Length: 494
Image 1 (spheres, rainbow, N blue to C red):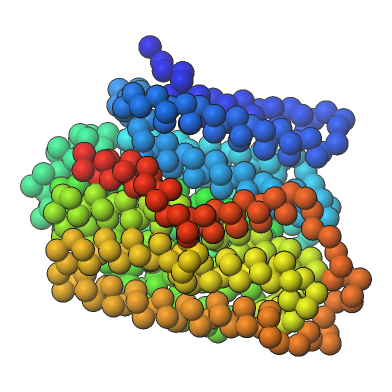
Image 2 (image 1 turned 120 degrees about the vertical axis):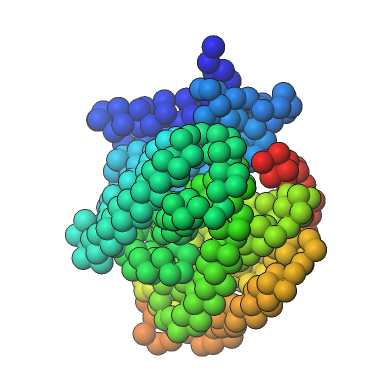
């Protein structure tokens, strides 16, 4: 018998998806499609809360290929909140740019559903379907500004790389299935014991890791990010940098910690290389950027490396430290979502006032938009990891997981690389904040009338939600205790 309570979030989102599509066909204001989409996301969060409060343990559906446990609930909540904030950022943006169409909300909701499905997927087929449901709407969203050549270029690059990464991933999954004879994670884990030296298994696992490396924009699979982020509508770039990236990490976590639990010697070194390269390349290239969205693109690559740091060392940890590493990765993901969405929301707001996207245009922001300058400071300094903002706790759990689990030489080296990169990142974040607070307003900036542009209420709400999340977690990190326990339990069980 199907557990409809466990599937309620997905069913509500699917119903909302159909409702948005039908409402868009009716002769009503397109604004109501956004209202329906936002309402559906809020409604989908209700059964998540009831499932969490019931504490009935793991719910297994479809012969174990779809599991609803605390870990899945945490990640589903992350995706729903991410989609909600991204939609809030989109409403005023699309209206002002005359791209206000219901199909946008349909596609974004479809991508959210794909991410939600991935959180519960426990076999190769369902997780691949989830990955594609996340990615395919993103190709269309990236090219939403149809008359903009840069947006078309962004969509084309994203599409080509996305299709390539899916092919690589699927090829790897087919090899894993061929070697183990199983598609469900538990079966793969049982069959892969003793296959760590099998060449075909090594190739299959590495190809899967490479496929997901494209999805999370880890170096050297990152080259689509800056152009795609810059050419996409800014709310889409925000969603790709958080929702799509987080979905990729969820796929990696589930596969490596459950399906490939006996193959840590294969994926551990690969993740180590991805983490070190992503942090270093992402931060070094970000130093040279003059466009704020491209800077955030390379910053997201670097943060992807930070997220991978405890993940990379999990292969050499004992079982308890393994749970801590898993928990640290998910905790960083949760905090990163609020920080980065807030940063993109500030970029949208400031761009509306100065009518330009270069960093030089942020000079003197405090003189005419002190509120935005303050919010920018909060989000950028949180991304840099400065206390008492949430970013410091993300960095803290990362270093604690790596150095506190019987750290070996490779763990110490990776932690040292992360520490150096954290300092590098602080430089370019602080440079933006310093310009906003201390530099004079450039003469070439938009007129005073343009600088008085009022923010859309939906964008103000998005900024408020993100700011509250960043500040609250920074001062009261214990609010993440439930999430840490939930994710740690899965790692220990896996």
